[in-house]
Length: 457
Ligand code: PMP
Image 1 (cartoon, rainbow, N blue to C red):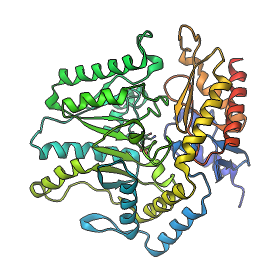
Image 2 (image 1 turned 120 degrees about the vertical axis):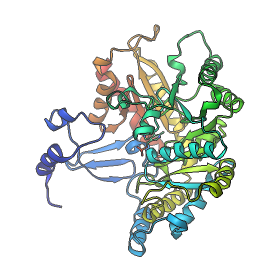
Image 3 (image 1 turned 60 degrees about the vertical axis):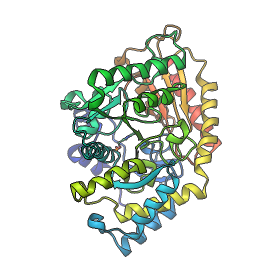
Image 4 (image 1 turned 90 degrees about the vertical axis):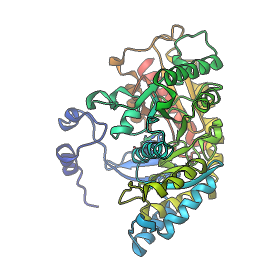
């Protein structure tokens, strides 16, 4: 292929408005631009020929790894046969209908229907509207507020960015909007009182939630949304007893649970869904990334039978649902989804995520846990994080201006491994493709040790 690196670099600086990027620094050329040109297995290669082990699977989405011929063929065949038809007014395609059946076959018990979208954000937007629609049908027009958690990540739309509990996503956009509230993050390492054990901290979180529901009025609180394990907010598994105690409160006040499984859906925790892993019983489940392993953009809301029964009743009062996207259930994306889920089964990737994930996390903890600036090594399945602290005994955090997390991620990249500096705190995150081997896990661990030493000694 013609080498256009210099031209591409200029076009990128001048014309490409990147998401989640410092605009000024990028336009001025003060931050690196990296043009990725190919991928194979767990590796990606850029236009300078530099290859990196992608230990974050893109944005925790390329679960089956890069370069899968089976998915590429499925996409090409679908594009040739039928590139598009919509899903409005009862239309479908073989691919979209087949995929909905495959999803329900894999979903936790009691799930009934799939509403397709394109991104995790729009699927959560659909959830919010379904929750409101549901309560309107039930004659509870006041029951509309949605409680999320600080450090939760649910998208970057107007309402979904409001649900996201990260300051960066709020402060410059006049968010959060009304009807969205945030409660305590289930972040045991950062618990307010260090004498609490995990169960006590879970109870503390549940008590805070109950107080919030009572203060707002249970008749006004419709739903609670949470990732089974916090992702972008720091890769934080729930403390012992957390979901059980939270769900007891939700049940008491008839507040619907929404499990945002955009990251955990389809295997990342070593179970098909995180809800099964942690005993959650959601009314709605959000899915995206692992549904197609990002070979094509596709998301969905899985609706439980309990919620579906109300929605279907209401349709006689409300008429056709006034909600839809042109590209919902896009056949090319659905074809990618089918091939992807087949591959997940054929390669036994859910089991591998559990097995290799446990190996990876234990090797990581052994290799870096001793370090005086490593406060915690945590995770579950194939998700792991290292949190850096200035003082381990006092759990004193580094001043953010020192950018310890980003420096370590940059040092790791220099060594050929991609980890992610999580946005709030000095946290290095890992979420490699689910096809990771033990040897590849060892490469990540060895290089993480060197990267940490190069920045923190
Ligand atoms: N929910 C969760 C749990 C996510 O991690 C993300 C994306 N990282 C989203 C929703 C939003 O997905 P998208 O970026 O596809 O809109």
